[in-house]
Length: 321
Ligand code: UDP
Image 1 (tube, protein in one colour):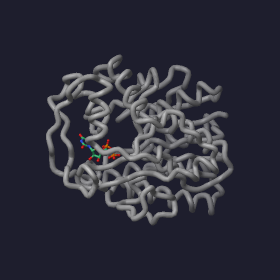
Image 2 (cartoon, protein in one colour):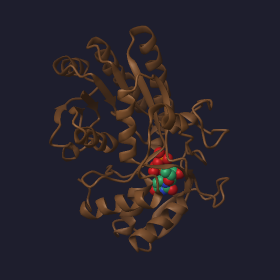
Image 3 (cartoon, protein in one colour):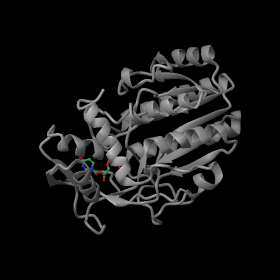
Image 4 (cartoon, helix red, strand yellow):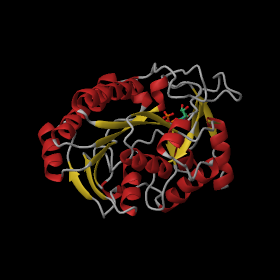
């Protein structure tokens, strides 16, 4: 299949690009390189440098490449930032993404797979969370992704564009060559590993008074290669709709830090910091639908394997890409 990966220089996008290429697909990456890294793009892929905000450039890319499938990763992803600058999230994640949808319709793309998020659920009443749980985001990032999911539904109904929205829980871990590297870093596992390497003095635990057994937030960490697998299955599937992709197991911030201490053999000092606005206490997936309807079978859904893979990558790339 020929696949255009928007945001293929980012963390999940670059790992998915590698996964698709390893399985014989042809990949064209479209990325602004605002957050992504040129060096994260697999040399077997072709990189088109462009922003989704540039409508002409997006149309030009799709018309020249004529991909069968599109995977759309290109978005801003920080909950905390979205609560300081909501407009940034609606402009980039919603308005700019529309250009990609229009170009996909224009070029007769068969299927578009969209990076959605567990943040669409807000404070779920049912945990593990099934897709039938009401969507009520509590941060602007989650709302921006939910709006895009709704647009996909209407583009399917009105224009016949096939789509799958994958609601990721917490992407984590690394392949041999590609890992998580944001500037500045805001995600828990890379921050913990930077502290293990002595690159930061401590890890701040954002809130230890949540209604969870140890008071810290519980998340469902899923290996980035397992997420990559879900994208390919979604592209190949005729089914449209939204699917959770997570391991189904929850770990608190303190538990992840403890796992990292065991894997790295480093002390990893922590300090307690205020809660981060927009953080729900507990997000754990029920991913039965992805397993039964897409045939998704995660291979690395063990938190130790996930942290160990991230640690191996970080040791090889102490300063990221
Ligand atoms: N977190 C934390 N300290 C940090 C970064 C994150 O305590 O320096 C917490 C955060 O509040 C959340 C969890 O770790 O409960 C995972 O956060 P991350 O930003 O990695 O992913 P998110 O859940 O926002 O997608």
